[in-house]
Length: 180
Image (cartoon, rainbow, N blue to C red; front, side, top):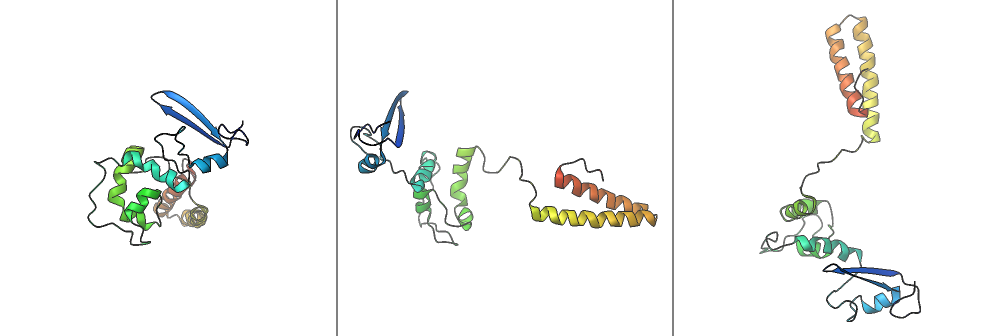
């Protein structure tokens, strides 16, 4: 498909605009899109697009940054870890380090609730990491030896406790019913 603007190059940028149910599609080559800054008067009368990842991610927060979610900021809040300020986060949509989550917690919780419906993870958990599986496997081997010794010595109460621990580890590690 050719660029709708210059009619010379292949269209690489495809934009679908939906306003009040009316769909308009625009197909532009990369050069025309860059030249226009995606602000062409005839094509985009009231849009100011910047297709950088930072601005795309930052714009995700704009609809949710309603007045009731914005808190008055007397002094600009900054992350203790990297020095990123909240206004920069709002513009870019990116945190600078893991401590940013703690520094901006009170400001991002309402955003997360609005976007996801909750501010806590409610889904499934990832599998055990290979390190945890290794440690669990080593412990299981040790416990099985102890169980065998306890049974041989007729220490049945101790054997029952070891058996229960083996079942607990087995069900935690692979989701089985825990029978050893």
